[in-house]
Length: 152
Picture 1 (spheres, rainbow, N blue to C red):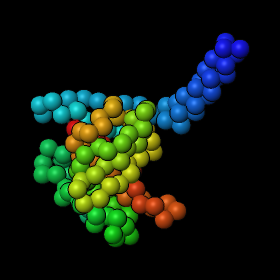
Picture 2: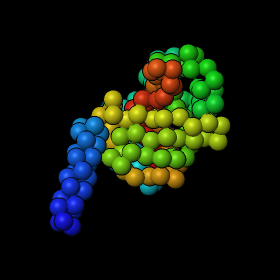
Picture 3: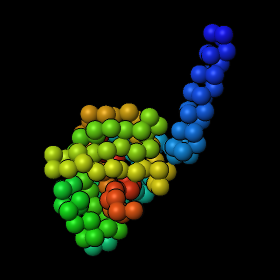
């Protein structure tokens, strides 16, 4: 009886893990070290060298970074930021086991960051400070950010 129970539990755990791998496992991690020990995850190598400003003009990431937007401002006026490339900065509060999404809090609010559309994952960094480059999106009334690049 104990062996049978073990096999049932093992089957359930395997099914859950398989569904997580299918949902999040299609992404890949592209980590490098830039300027000191800061890890960077970017969807493409071009994303590491070019950042889009709010006006849509490419600029070098080695030049001055775009203005960091407060999460509170995004959540209060999502239509103003929707579809625009922005930067948010804060602490990682929670994270997917596979690293394909996380929540970020900057002291003014918390926002969900989805990395899967960019084919991107990050290592487990719960509690770490992060700078996220991406676009704001709204689905079913929920405002979130599609992350294109993450710096730690």
